[in-house]
Length: 168
Image 1 (cartoon, rainbow, N blue to C red):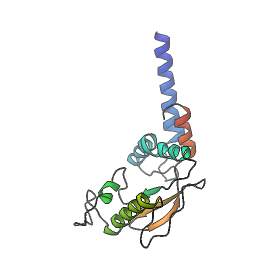
Image 2: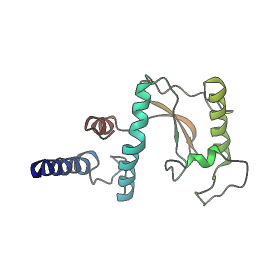
Image 3: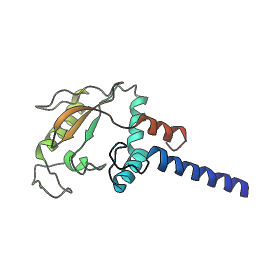
């Protein structure tokens, strides 16, 4: 029994070393997708629990689906719900717990409604989005850059490691 526990412990240490030194090293110049320790931790958790699953879900549907990237600051998972259920009320320039951009909220609602009706997300004044496809296209929703097609920047190699090691 000790050998099993010791082997498992060594496996965990080896994995932690790979995660912290290879996949997400302490390099804060933005080249790995983060510039602070907090952003590094947020990226690790978001890739483990959200982003990599989304990438594999898309792969499971042969990339024949539409994807959007909600990039309204602070752009944390779930913050798009504020915009999805926006009822036309007040907005705030400073409070991230309420809608900060009415246009983004209306466009997101139009995209969702259009997709539910026709299978294609479309919104007034927004260029029609490509399917995710092999080029990994996403429609980015942002108050600074507006609505534009961007490529999914999720690290395929990091997601592959999580999957291959049995974490996903």
